[in-house]
Amino acid sequence: MRAAVSRAGAALLATAAAAAVAGCGIRATDVPVDAGPAPTRASCDMPSGETGEGNTEIYLVCGSRVQAVGREMNLPEDDSAAGRVAVAQALLDALRSEPAPQEQAAGLSTEIPIGLEVSAADDPVPALRLSLRPGDLSREGLAQIVCTFANNEVLGSSGDTVLLGGPAGSSPSQPRMYSCAAAMRTVTEPAESTVGPP
Image 1 (cartoon, rainbow, N blue to C red):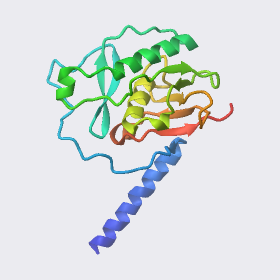
Image 2 (cartoon, one colour):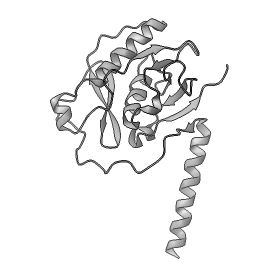
Image 3 (tube, rainbow, N blue to C red):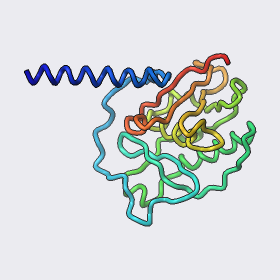
Image 4 (cartoon, one colour):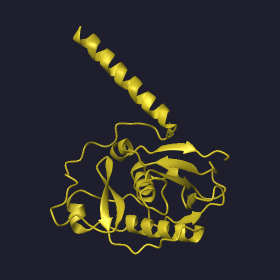
């Protein structure tokens, strides 16, 4: 009897989760779903007074999730195409930099590859193109970029989504909307949707 109840409860939870995803209008990414790496023994928490406070949030990897840390950065507030690229590249450079010693001690790291660059996309205008296809990045690295960009006032939309694509001419060529949902921050499984014609 208990087994039947457990199975019924699991089915109910799965149905509720599917309904929540469908309700937000964003389909799951094509990246295969798996259990991810074994849980880290690192706490991801830094000692009091060493929390990396700053005026800008970037996201670093800890185990199978990403976590916000602060950086003191002088970012332009220009929302033109050139300004957006300048902000995005500065954030990418910060993400790629080696975490501070206290962050490393807490188990934080980065998955941003050397040489990754960003440029503006002509269609649609708010989109950004990476020098690698988003699907060619590790899930953790993509989650770092999505959440860092989405939470920037110049780049993000309502603090949750950002339009990203790969190099011009790559497949898929159309930029996609990536969402930094709370669930994605823990499973590093970015939600995406294809951006259609207006």
